[in-house]
Image (cartoon, rainbow, N blue to C red; front, side, top):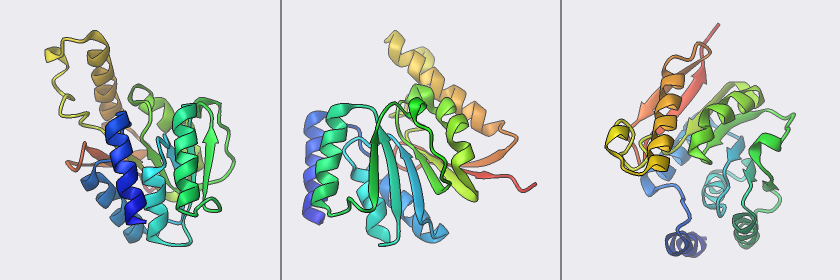
Length: 195
């Protein structure tokens, strides 16, 4: 399995596919152990790297993961087969906004289009178990968040502003409390406030 994960890291590096940084994946897997997470909804499969990592923690863990990019979906499917996890990782190839799920999850992991983070959060929070957690990756976005005015590229500046807006949305959310961790590329862990 170590060999497969190394192959995936190399592929991601060569093909410029964003996968979770080592520090971030370590944080996520420790959180899953600590909270005894068994069911995960992942928005943004990429090549299946984090989904496989999550399933390696405990044979009872099941992941439903959504990927809209056909090439990444194919690559993820191949990797999941190699990891012999087809019965535990279900990959849905679709735009997350077109996905309707009834089931509830212990963890929702958001790691897809950064500009849509707030919409993903709002759409899928109903799929979270009462005591579940929502984890968001890339909140620092390579250290650019908080420095939007210094970015020359208009598109990049716009994306960074959207991540900043998402951070504000989390900080002022009346339903969830979020703790921010300066780990990897910045991680947020959101839990429902006790009512």
